[in-house]
Image (cartoon, rainbow, N blue to C red; front, top):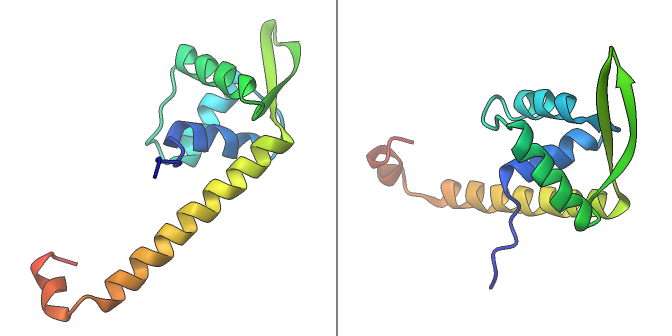
Amino acid sequence: MADTSMREPTFWILTALATGRRHGYALIREVQELSHGRVDLKVATLYAALDRLSRQDLVVPDGDEVIDGRFRRFFRLSPAGHDVLATEIERMEQNARDARARLALAPQTERMVFGA
């Protein structure tokens, strides 16, 4: 069975766009915040990811604007991106449920050995 999990940066980019359109630098800041600092995107990495996600029809370019003298390219989540993100969230939640169930079944002595 192929690994269908989503890489963490992609997950956080789609999550950041779930609440509305964002420009690149706002996405970088929001992804870092949402991931509690685990994902620190560089500009080139972000735009490569956005290009890939756009080709996959998961994000859609949503206009360009000049804000405070700076050019900003905006993106938004597509309906397909919404569906893919929702599916990934369900997959992650199922994994967490399965892991919790396994932990609950672990004998007390094994919990002590592994420091849980």
